[in-house]
Image 1 (cartoon, rainbow, N blue to C red):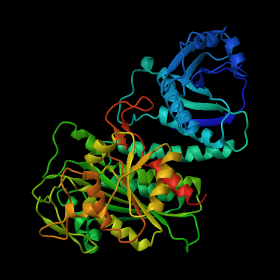
Image 2: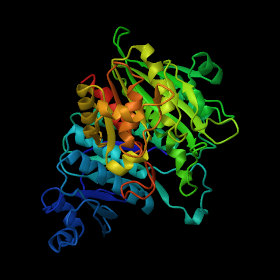
Image 3: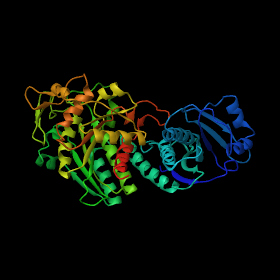
Length: 492
């Protein structure tokens, strides 16, 4: 469902709206235009602040009933003590939209004080993130139990300069998030490798992008033994998907975005525990991030060249599945000993990273729900960031700050390479539990040669198994924002 967004100056007190959202910081005071709103509410806003019923803390919500005229309801949302006002506004907007969607108000008006175009963009993205809901596979409730979904929002701004551009950018990025979250939420029997390929073709048709889809036979001709070893246990055809966005001159080297697309990961022969295995439908969130980013970049019409590459398959146990101890040969020629078949994402990425080098990219950024070890290291707050080029790492980290998808750099020193040396091959696909996220990244480094490269381990940030307050449990849309801001940063 799409949220229609508008920006304009409004008279908050006289506004005929089902819901007026006021985003307020700690120790907020009542000045214009809040004084007029307070008067329309019979002083209820002032009382809530004076009595400290509302203190402006992060995610704090207080609901006030309106009067016969003006806003029917007023929702106070706390901004908290964040040092980044844009990020605070984004989160508050998401909380507000989620509440409004559940209340069944249909439309809302947002006021968060004066906002720069960048802050306005954060608000608009946050509203879209909060109202998002996956209902494709749910039977609608009876008519008398249905609530009106949130379909439109008006953002009050004092200064309209730059507002339209900010709103357009937010809508483009929001479309990317929507696509990525929808793909992530789909069950594995719906979001198959073929479905990801169809989505890529649809993006290409709508935006005039070149799309190429390779299957098992083509992968065999390219000698992608690492990718194919993961796919050999499933009857579904693996798919290597390439989308090319050409927004700059042909002589300008592209940036490459690469995503792991395990549409379901059972672990293969090294099978995962049954408890929670249903969440392994989210193992394609890196691929969803690439597709969502390509959607947003195309809508933004950025003057940059971007190649998006996705490797899609499923990792299943069967009589034909790869076994622990097997040795496979990657397209680069390197021989890999498969120690654990559940360390499959890096096998797919090995061939993707080698393949994308044919486009001579100026930089490669890959994203994958790669390791549980990264979740242990960073929890569900930060994306693990690794790279072979400090300048590129700094670029990606800055993109994470701008997009409210923070990352944290972890080392890939040469000492870690010792842990993935094999007795029978050039390299093995896991170095054991210690530093598991680092040795996984170190494995990937073997397949990028000297191309500037960054790896994003989004295992802890691309989806959540619990409610996150601002958004429900499920896919978050990470790393769409980081990808898009990285591309935007290249042309700023």
